[in-house]
Structure formats: structure tokens, C-alpha cells
Length: 284
Image 1 (cartoon, helix red, strand yellow):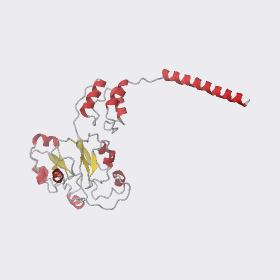
Image 2: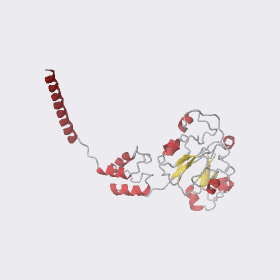
Image 3: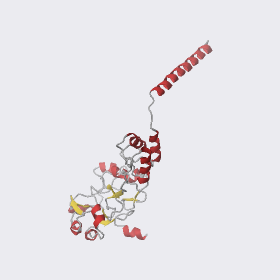
Image 4: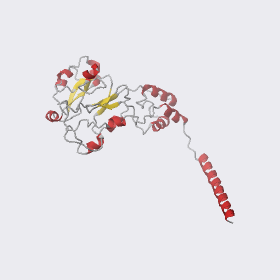
């Protein structure tokens, strides 16, 4: 009797499974959503960095958008550069406009030897966390905290923390995806053309006296650089020198602004070095 009951139970379960399977199969065919095969083709050619630099949450999301939305251009993948843009354009039938190559620039020269620390931070070694706790442990509230959050989020190994406490960008590996830009709690990192001649290695908007108090290498807003530039490529905005790199590249062949800068915060755009250590690293 027990054996017969068990057999009936098994048969009932098998029958129910077949019935439900039939309905699921029918529903799948009836309401199936057609997926454009080009979406997977585009996803295959993308570099899979999942950086979000295109404005979409991952490569597949961008692939779907660029295939299905006629207003989404095929050149939004900064890591893929022109080669990927051309492939995406071919798959989608769109026209690829050349992307302007840019790389990350860390606007701070406040190394351990030049920037004053106001305390000892013993929390999580993360810039965002440190910044939340009374603005971190650095005297300059605009300066790099040096805990390497930007380094951790870089999927292309283009950022390394230097012994001096400032992240260094490898221009050969940086794709300009902008992930480090968005994660920095103090907005220190920006994207610039790799061919620029002059870098303003400071992010401070404090007055000169306050800058001097906290950092030996900060911009004091004296305006000497702006006065010395014959092309008007430099302005002082909220006590910080701002360089118009387009004017600088187009007209200037001898940037005297760097010579006039009393704190040497304006330095040659030598990549892969900590500001103030360019000559030393060139000799090595």
C-alpha cells in the first residue's frame, strides 16, 4: 500500500512537471523578447573595463544603448579609443567621430615633505572615509589625502601611489575613462590632453597666507604667471592659476610662467613623475 502510494505521488509530480514545463515553454515562445544580435557583437569588441566612463553602468549597458538608441554615438568608450569606436560604428551603421585623447592629471604636489598633516588618521585607508572624518588629516582641505582610492578603482593599472604620498599616472596605460576623477572626494583629478606643456600642480582655493601655512608647494594666487604670459593663457580664479591649454599649445613655445612662479607649482608637463621630482626621475 505504501509502495503504491509512493508510485502515485511520483507519477503526479512528473505529470505536474510536464504540465508546468509545457506552459513555461509556451509562454517563453509567446512572449519572447527579440534581442538584436548586434548588441552582443558590440559587447564583444568593448574592452570590458566596466569603468562607466561612457555614462552607462557597464559595457553591456552601453552596447544595448548604442544599438537601440539612434542618438547614442559609437565613440563613447574612452578606453577603447578610436579602434573600438570604428568597430562599433561598423556594427551599428553609425558614423564615428574621432575622440580627443585625454589622460588623468592629479592636481596636487603636496607630498609628505611639503604638506602639513594636522593629525594621525587611524581609520580605513580610503580617501572617501578619511575625508568624511573632519575632512581628513591633511592641513590643506583641497589636497590629496594619499590613501589611494583612485589607485584601487583604476581597472587599467594606470595609477600607482608614490613613496611621496601622491598618486602617479602612467600615460601609457591611462585610457582617460574618468573613473579616478569621479571617485576622488576632493575633485583633485581631472582629464587633460597628454600634449599640454604646463601643469598647475595645485587644487587649493585658499588665500596665499593660508596656503603657505599648510603647504610649501601650493599656488598662492600671486598672479606672477598670468602677468608674465604674453598670450593671456593664464587667469587667477579664486586664488588659483588656471591655464587655457588650447591657447598655450597654439601660441606659446617658451612658457616663461614656470620661471616666474615663486612656489614652482607651475611645472613642465612631464608624465609619470611626482611634481618636484621630474629631473631626478629622468636621470634614473
